[in-house]
Amino acid sequence: MSVPRVVSVAPASPAERAGLQVGDEILSLNGEVPRDVIAYRLLADEAEIDLEVTRGGLALSLGIEKFPGEPLGAEIHSALFDQVRTCDNHCEFCFIYQLPPGLRKSLYLKDDDYRLSFLYGNFTTLTRFTESDLERVITERISPLHVSIHATDPEVRADLLRNRRGATSLRWLRALLDHDIEVHGQIVVCPDRNNGAILDDTLAGVLDRFPELASICVVPLGVSKYNPEAAMRPHTREEASEVVRTVHDWQDIFLATLGHRLVFAADEYYLTAGEPFPEPDAYEGFPMHEDGVGMARTFEREFMGATDSPTGVATGFFAWVDGAPPEGYRAPRAAAAPQVGGGRVQLRPRSNAPIGILTGTYGVEVLRPLVDSLGRDDVRIIPVENEFFGGNTAVAGLMTGSDLTRVLSGEPEGHRYLLPDVCLSQGVFLDGAAPHDLPRAVEVIATDGIALRAALESR
Image 1: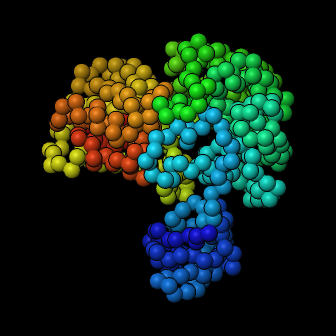
Image 2 (image 1 turned 45 degrees about the vertical axis):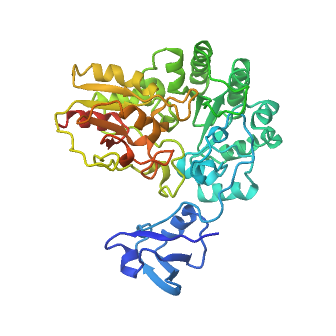
Image 3 (image 1 turned 180 degrees about the vertical axis):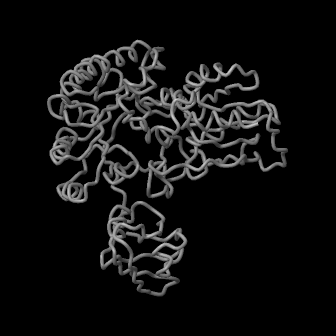
């Protein structure tokens, strides 16, 4: 077990007034040793805090007095100080098993930790959830949580998770809902495994057993070229259309019985099926936006000026690893300045230079009608086919440095190239490259329609 290390101290904050410094390691707050950032923040909310810290090997005691609930003003290095609770399922569709070798070690860690579910929006299967976890969630009101359902039939769910505890672990979901914990569900649909009649049965099971769920996203499995499971394959266009129809049918049922639609299909389904996205009102506030549900519609609204602020913060894949901030997916991203590629001296593109928007192949379909509506001949969309992962990997959040290098090498110098920040975590791509390694200078911008429109209008 590690201890929280201070990485920043806000000026004029209670922490600074008490003499807390960057690099200090916090051993305890009021005699309690926090095991994660959740406990740390609860303890730091107290009006009087006795801190035990170490600094350069020396033990120090610091006393802090502040208003109850006033921020302490000290950020710490990690979200968890004990071990991440790893996943002991062996799902055929798990993307971790489909990663190429040689990536940084943290990317291969499978978590099934309810704390990361709360902090970062990760989904937990609850197969390692315990009575003591339930007590803490209820007592500390750790909400919302995000739960992987996949199937409500016990045998089907155990088979999908390849874990016999999968047959019974949804009892914890029932317990969470009984104590008014907000829970969002996820169903990863695998062709020939839990689509068709099984998907219908799963949604019927939700209505019967878990009607208090806040929302459910239905998402397709991702298949990379490293997929070791022969039975796992991408949806056909017809299968994607069937899933969309099933979700729409059940939305009508949930709306009639519960008063809201409850279940939503991921944007990828509409793109694969070649069907139009639902109207914005049909998403009921976009509760599953971070999981790829309604992102196209919110991006359109942002780009066209229908809203003054982004709907949500796009996270990208594995956003919680490598010391991601304690706020997790709630933390705003800071767009970077233009970066020179390849370590070579380059002239910064002139402000009125032609513009290329870099995005995944799914993003092209979303962006093209928006860019066309501008009537400009100096803006083009540059699709980045994902050869690094292969398969049906087509989202912007999984673009890598190697694929961007391949594409940008064939693009002219002196143009402005816009790159969405969703493909970066801690300033690097999944393959370890950084924007400054690219062969052309890029401007990293926030992944929302407002930021894109502003970048296009800045000349």
